[in-house]
Length: 276
Image (cartoon, rainbow, N blue to C red; front, side, top):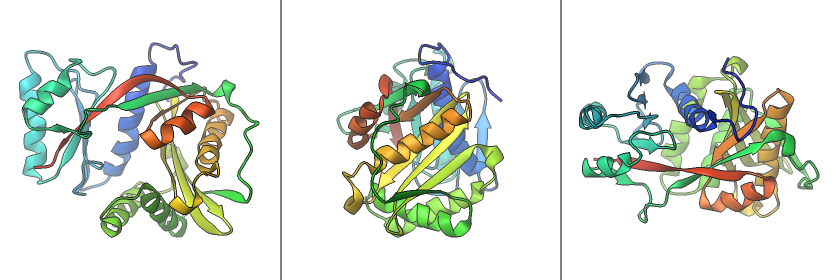
């Protein structure tokens, strides 16, 4: 087990954040036909699902001598599998301007205005436990296939966007492939209002931090503090398990929620996509 990060001033936090993101995605590829590949230059995750979300390159440490070769190597790898992918450029990425080189090779930034995602962290001993809980919200740990099916549907409808049925199928298959073994340190939670699934969250404990993912709420249940409580539930659970720092990557919609909880922004991460 990795040594736990004690506070947000730890010089290893940036690396822990990026490696936690890699770890939670790599679990989708633990079984064939998924593939996980890692060396000193990069880490790569492949699944058979045709989405940039399920196929990624992380933690690139490239040199001027091998950069062009390694970029082309990954493009050729995914092209040969006819699968789109994304390349995540974070705070420990080398070179720092890798995104420019990726664009020169045909990848495009996920945002038209090149807006990178905020990377945020919080020290768990600073959690505000006095934030009121939404009335009637019940939170359940996902421990079986039936509840996982409800969790995936709430997640995808909460995120919105097109291709709902296909995305539900892919997410369900990918999460079912991971399964429910607590030793994998992947914990999914489903929030109910009046018996209806309305919100989701996921925690992955890796590299000494608690990674927060998949916080989503159905449109009709928003603005009631449900997303806040789903996040706090994860953070409190992690704290009770001895973790001291929580991390996440925020969307624009979630940024204000996380700031109110106590998260601070420390870095940015750029996501570059290949869809050809």
